[in-house]
Amino acid sequence: MKEIEKISADLFNKIRSRFQSINLGDEKAQATTDPERARFFNFIYGDRNNQQFGKITMSLIDEKNLKVAFSNNITKKMNTQQRRDWHDFLRNIRLFAKRNLLQCDIRDINKDNLDIRDIKQQSKNDGVNDVEDINVVESRLWGTSRSSYQECGPVRIIVRHSDNVDETKRGARSRHIECVFLETQQGERRLLPFRNLTGARAMAQHCSQGGALDDDIGESITSMCEEMNKMTHFCRQARHREFEDTETSDMAQAAVTRYSELKNRLQRLSGRRGYEEYKECWMPESDIQDEIDVDGLRERFVKKIYDDRFTDALPYVYRAYKRHQQQQESAWGEAFENWAEDITEMHLDEDLSDNREEIEKLDKIMAQQLEVGADGMSAIGALRDIIGDHSLEDRFSELADSEGDTADAREIILQWLQDHGYAELASKYSQAYTQQQTPATDPNQPPPQPAGVQAEKPAGTEYGAAGTADPSPQANTAQMAEDADPLVTLRNLAGLRR
Image (cartoon, rainbow, N blue to C red; front, side, top):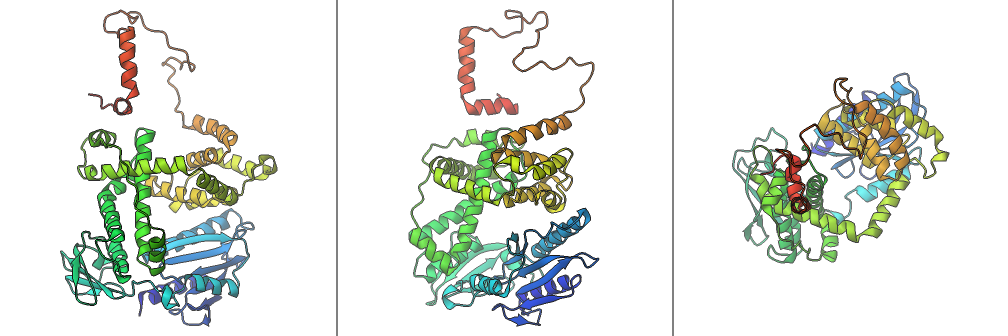
């Protein structure tokens, strides 16, 4: 039995355990009664009291993603408990996808149901029916206890492992990789300068189309794999760290974004269509020519014990940050287009006076702590009818992963309102949120001074007294010069000044 057939059967059994009437469709959107052949699952979602809310369609047509589509008004008739059950159901579907190494794409649609014409169109878009559309990756890894093979069109990938492969463990052939070779139909075998399997598949597609390892596109693939290899450890650690200043945090975020872009680009290159699109629009990527102060950058990411594996990644981190800055400065039209798309995804209108009902709901939510919930589902459920932004939902999920299910989601909501032009709402909620976060003051401590008013100096601390700084013009000039250096400022803020 193929792996996708087992996943399909397991998904059918999972759905059938709660919902009885399930319509199945195969990869050509034709009706079928065999769960192993099924790639579409259509059923009516209801609660345990048989109250129906709407139809759901799940798809496994591209064998890499579990897609879930449902009407965007499916939750309007639900009460609080029914909404919780609904989000628990979606969370379980996400967990099922993760356990089977699938991406989970959950989205709502404007239609109440996907009809047979929509399903056939989705099958045509996502399916693999035409020889011209088939990816060059035609098989999964197979082989012996120390070697793995994969046929990629006329090119074969050969992987040598540093340890025995345990066939009982999923993904065992993608671990303990010692080296990777490409072998052509003529038997010529070349050692790849990297061990990235995604990059190896992209290079196999390139060689299948008549390319070579040392031509322009081949070198660009090698460069992407090398950059990913240098940044892997840095990005893994940066996802779970908080940095003292905004610029260092922006650098880390730019590096993580760059790493994801490279990974997605290599994945697209492994398919024929993606490779042809890349080849048509390929241009040499201009590199950042700034002189890189590695020692200064190291101070930004220093801990009590510095991880030397960061050193190799720092030049790429800096280049990713500078590239991100250039894109922001030069792509005003693209930024406006993205802003317009984000606005269309929201349920709030630009004129807040027309949304009093949604504002009242938001007032109640922001009045007290909003726990993000498992996988962010509690916060997603609370905000879905008010702000239908998928990027906001992703941030809730990331918050749940990093800080736990009980983390307060209101700070993310405040930032979203500020970023999307609702400064007045953000200010109103920020005052209440800040008051709740402020700890009770000690009655023995002096009251805080208003902004702009300096506290009285104790006796003996006037300028000129022993132990105080000299406010001479030379000292002020030196201090201003020191403050002008951002690295010195970062060291002062982090307590690392030498």
